[in-house]
Length: 233
Image (cartoon, rainbow, N blue to C red; front, side):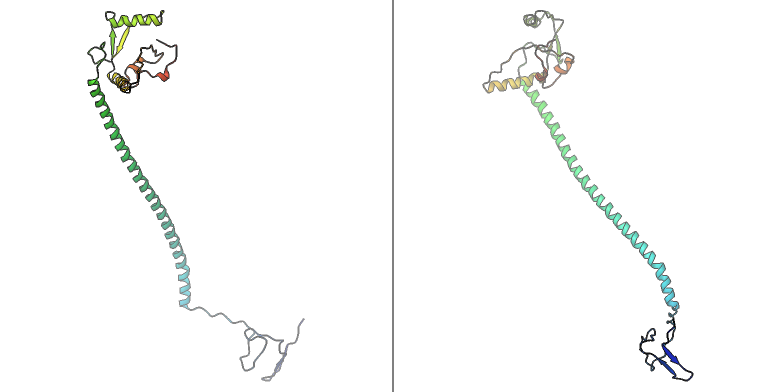
């Protein structure tokens, strides 16, 4: 529905309107005739100059490039920082490993020196240690005892006394110098402490174990923790 808000005529100034009923963009609802009569059209945007157009185009081109370069720089920085951290950890780990390896080498050298010192002490003690009277002058560890030897018959009668049904096929004497020195050392230590060494002769079997493992040993010989009562031969 149309509503009259103003009147006009053919002469200049022949114009009237109801105040508060007519509003124009930019001037509002109060019209001052000293001002330019408003138009019923909205302002036309200003056409950008060539400089402004070129600037906008350059901005559209440069801004994405700068953004991409920034992202690449940030990516490379984070990656480099990560690699640097990993390299520092690797270097630190390598330094610790080298330190441990050096300590292990020193320990190995000390162990080798200790072994040589032990061997020299055993040889020196053996030189001072009297050997059993039944031993013969030989470098062999296992020496056969012949029936012409009194030691053979001593073992024969003792075996028959403890095990009447047993018989002797062969008798071998173990001449293990390091083991004898080790045994003598502990025996002399008991004597120096005024402790009865309680030395005695016993029978000991090897079952399925190769006897060479026992008579070639350098320290333990027979190991009592593996022995069982009633086993022999």
